[in-house]
Image (cartoon, rainbow over all chains, first blue to last red; front, side):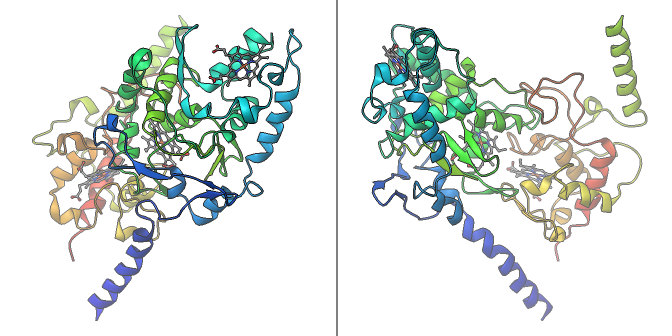
Length: 283
Length: 157
């Protein structure tokens, strides 16, 4: 009798865990028309490190997922509207707005998010979207750079990302960016901090598992910038990296640092083939 | 001048903390196990249970399920359930496992709870900043003993 009761309890306890293990089977269609690829074959360069790619959306609760399925519910969209205003407003000594040179973002920025970070030939460097935006502000508008992971910047990258929603992430990893990509890969597998945990420990070896109250995803960045319910704002990928490194009891790198630029390129490449979802909603 | 005093103070604090205890660098491991108590004071299993379950202390349940701590919510599933650990492992093995699991399981994801060096970019706890002095181990010597005492109570039915 006693044994049976205990088995029954064990089964009850196990049930909720079994229910959340792994990504769920839901499909993401935004506004009833943008079909997102949230699961796809891993790119060859991963060499089998991940059997399949999954968007972080597949690991969130139904309630959180729903917020991203309709722009009227997506709390990130107010920031896209704000950025549209900034896009059209002149700033800096040249008296120019983004629109002065780039016209309608819906046209000029389509497909841009999907290929960043990317090599900038003239500057001879790997550029993140944030770095490119600040380059335009400083060197083409005569305006002050925005804080790398601040609200203005996150909003502008949301406006730019939205023009690529549903397109596959497709960052280049060879040619002039290869050394940066290799550096990012090394960082990804380094066990930082007093807890000695690498990105891979959590997001490659344990995605689908619970770590305390958190359901681990693959740590993909196809959904950035991300509106997090936890801090009720848009978050850049580098801010997220910083939080994850800090949680290993490590000294973090700074947003915009060469280390995080390299890491972003590498992590983005681990999502080649997933849809651009930004701005996404996560908890 | 100021630096000297600070260094001295740190040395004193450091020294005091290890008085009568085995410092992290002096722990003797044999095949991952640690025979001698780190403090000489018997472990308090009740406090050990607190350390295992509390986010602010060992936070072992972040990665392990422990049925004996059923009231602690959100138990993780990174490592095996600790149920029966007291039957699977001797006290010395448990002490070694908690102090530095990497000597029992090579490359383990489990943090080393009684070690202070050999880290890559260690920080000042969870601030994300560089440490402002020598690192302290994740758990104190007595907390390790308390956790070992608690684990020893987790016997197979």
